[in-house]
Length: 141
Picture 1 (cartoon, rainbow, N blue to C red):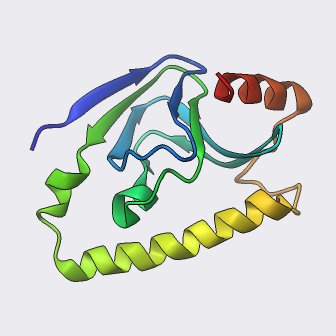
Picture 2: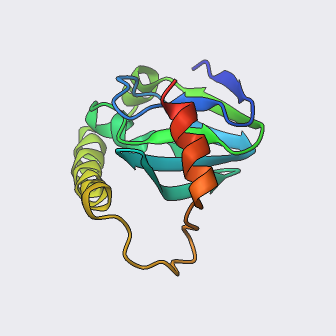
């Protein structure tokens, strides 16, 4: 199976909510912001770093990307083609992944509509106004 290395510059967009691509990525180096938008409000839902996966929801359920992903610093990823990996999956694993993806997408919709209520969440640092403006402008290009 052939993997493709993808290099992102700081503030470069990997994908936007609604993109139809469904490949899986592993972060080799760098840091990414996973966020959702409601109007001009940008809400972070995860900060990801080395060794973490990206794109698993679309990988399992073939639905469009559910969030925007931006490089916070120069980042190198390994792109894993969905079709190649699926050939090696037992059918039950695909079903399990699809069910889990559905549950996570429902939670993402709640965050998108209502925001994150707990401002002191340690794993998700909120964006200040300047950061929201910056990332909104990057994603609006």
